[in-house]
Structures are given as C-alpha cells and as structure tokens.
Image (cartoon, rainbow over all chains, first blue to last red; front, top):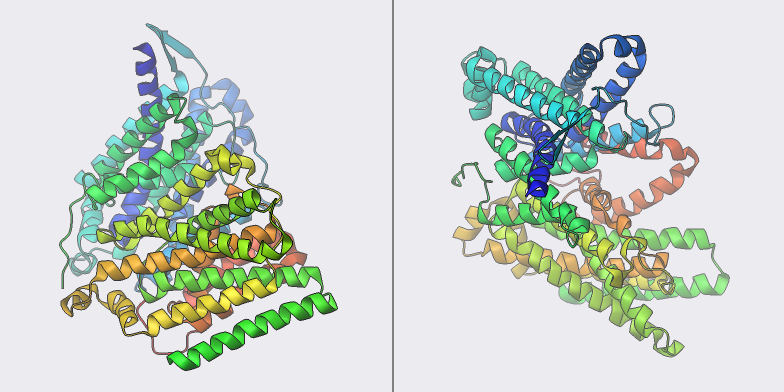
Length: 303
Length: 310
C-alpha cells in the first residue's frame, strides 16, 4: 500500500512536468495548428540557462537559497520566453500561409539546428553536466512515505503555474484574444485582435512554461546535455495528443496520466524496459478509439 | 510509362547494375566509393518507397525507419542462422530469400500501421507512425533473440553494387508502374481530395493501406540490404532521426516526383561525405538546409511541374 502511494506520488511529480511541457505544445497547436518540434529544445535551453544563471551567482545561493532559486527559475523562464518568440518570428512567421506540412518540416529543422548547434564544443558541448541542486534538499517521511522536497516544490510550482495560466486565459483580455485566435484567426483579426502579436505571446508563454519544466526535469535527472529535451518532449507531446491537442485541461490530464502510467509500468520488473513503448502504445490505442483525444471534440469533415 | 517500354527499361537498368558490379570486381574499384554508392542505392529505395506513402498518397508517415528495421533484422537473422552451413553457390538464393522475407514481414507491419489511417489524418497520423517506429525499435532493443541493445554482429557482407542498384531499379519501376496504372490513379485522387475520391467510387482506406503495405515492403528490402552492407545492426540506427532523413529526401525531391526523389536521395547521401572535412558543422549545415529549403523552395528542389498540393 505504501509502495502504491509512493509510486502515485512519483508519478504525479513526473506527470506534472509532462503537463507543463504539454501545455506549450497544445497552446501553439491551438493558434497555429502545427506541432512545434523545437519545443523540446526550448526546454533544454531553459535548463542550461538555469545552469549558467546559478553558476554566475554563487554568493546569493549561499545567503538566500530560496530567493536565489526563484530568481534562477524566473530568469530562465524569461530567457526562454524571448527565445521562443524569436524562433516563431524567424522560422515560422514567414511560413504563415504555407501548407502545414511545410511548417512541420521546418519545425523539425529548427529542432535539429538547436540540438546540433548546442552540441558543438564551442556552445555547450555534448557531454553531460551535473545540474546544481537549486532547492535545499530535505526528505520528509510521512507514515512510510518518502517525500523529497524537490518533488514537492515541482508539484507546488506546477499547481501555481496552472492556476496562473488558467487566470490569464480565462479572465484577462489577452486570454480572450488568445482564445479568439485559436477559434478563428480571420474573425479575430476583423475584431481588432493583433493576431501576430498574440501568436508571439503564445510562444513566449509556452516557452516560459517549458523552461520551468526543463529545470524541474533537470533536478530529477542525473544531469543536463543538449539532447535532454528529446525524451520528455516526445512524452509531453504524446500527453498533449492524449488529452486532445489544442485543449488546455486535456494537456494537464494527459500529462498526469502519462506520468502515472509510466511510473507504474516502470515499477513492474517485466515492463520496465518497455516504458517508452508503453507510452506510444497507449497513445495509439486511445487515438484509434477516440481520434480527437480524451477531451478533444471531434470536428466533422467539411466538404 | 507504358508496360513494354517500362519492362525494357527495367531490364536495361538491371543489366547495367550487374555490368557495373562485374567491372567493380574486375578492376577493383575503390572500396570507399563503392560503399557510398551502395548507401546511395539503399537510400533511393527508401526514399522512393516513402514517396508512395507521403508523396503520391498524401499521408504523412514518420515511421519508415521502423519498416526498415523489421526487414533488416529479419534478413540478417535468417542469413545468420542458415548461412553457416550454406554452400557458396546457394548464397545468392539465401540472400534473396532473406531480403524477400524481410520485405514481406515489413509489409505485414505496414498493414498494421496502415490500418489506423482508417480514422486518423494529418498530424495525428504522423505521430502514430512515429509511435509505431519507436515501438518497433524498443522491441528490438529488448529482445534477446535479436541481440538486445548490442544488436546483431557478424552479418555476412553480401550486399554489393549489383544487388543494390538492381533492387533500386526494381523499386523505381514497381512504384512507377503502380502509380501509373489505372488502379494507381486512385493514389493522387486520395491525396488531392479524399471526399471527392470517395464520391467517385474510390475507396480511400484501401488506397492508403496499400500504399503503406507496398512502401513498407520496399523499406524492408532496403533494411535487408543495409544489414548485409554494414554487417552490424544496432537498434539505435533505426530511430526517429533515420525516418526524418528519409522524409527530407522525399521533400527535397518534391513530393510525388519520383525522378526528383531519386536525385535527392543520391544528393543527400553524397552531401555528408563531401562535408566530412567540416565534421563539426556538418549536422548544423544539414539542419540549416532543411529550414532554408522550406522557406525558399517548399515544393522541392527538383520539382518544376505545376504545383501539386503537398
């Protein structure tokens, strides 16, 4: 029983990281209808930004560790927000009216470009580096359960960010504009919404979330390297599709579900080697049964 | 291409391939160049077969490396098990049998992958095919029978220029014949407008699934050739990036343009070899090439005809 609860907790922590990344995929898909393959690399850049920020401010880390952690996370999120908007402006905006397949291939190209550039010795190099422990490490024991303070921090930050995102999307003028662009870009622009600006903001928001997710992922992983984003990126993408791509609550649900399934499957000896395959198998089964994802609405084909 | 002219053309190509092989043995060609030529031939098979799925039929498959893996592992395992006691005169027969078995099994997997196309399209289909490719890789990675993570080693080096060019010619011929046949007019019809095609009595599902089966068969054969060329098979060689490589060849050549795709496959095999001197920047240049191509010439480098919807 305690083992079950322990796995549940681990799964939720992993799942909330997936959820954060999946939100970025789903938001971009909502406004532009394409899979932003470079999203997983923004996540990696977020982790590296945090790595360098933390290394640049050792005094602060010693004096006020919590404030320092907050500053590093915020800084990395800000850097990634700018990068995300920049990627959109340079690579995707010129292709706005092209077929989606063209944009998809460009996204793959951008992703490869970032990965290979970062692997170059003059940039980050291909070697794995150990990531600093941003938050003070404590292990709480609670009736046989071990709660690492990192996992708790990740869960707390995720919950906070989700609430914030929900507020922005549902309650602010910006959110209304985002939903309008996702619903119908032409009509939105006729109503005076600056579609280009909204798309930039969407990329910036999604990338900032990815940066936070990247830091959270790096805290759990042994270290960071230029290809660290690929695996969580693919998983989060599956999560987004699982929940119904373009659907924000769906992305969170899909992320949590995938994290739980992966953790439980990894706990079983016979299945642990097949963890990655299970995620995909699940995706295929769900898509065959519900082609629009768990929470997505199926759109009738128009002639 | 008319039937008789096509057959003559195919015969000429196979003869040329065999003659080339004979010359290669007779005058002892440079091994490095021969290896690159074989690589180019294998890539031609892969790209032309993917072109049937992605170009002619308008589906978006990101799992071609998976089919290649199935064919490669099947053929390699067959020759490894049966090859020991096999007299040298029977080797070509065994090799051919292994390649065809690999192709057949890949075609079966293609059928399994093609079936979800009943309900999925566009990005969703792309991701499901990517998923199938990854599942195939993970299964090979964990199966002791296929050498798990280390893969298969000591595969006999039987793939030579004759085999590769022969099969490349056969692939081009087969795909062209299928697409140019009366039956095959349905492939572009499904690509251009599925609803209109269905209204004209064409069954889109049948066309999509047959595109996957035929494409997978040739990818499987290419996998077998690859296995007996490299003599080592490793599951990581068949990952998502390999599939992307093949997709880029198809896009570079122009979706649905067989001649362009052949040229692109050869070009993209030679390019990394030419860039060997800049090994550090090679992959960066490759990524930049993809982006620039999409920005400047999304219809493909070698596509000069009226624009088709990609």
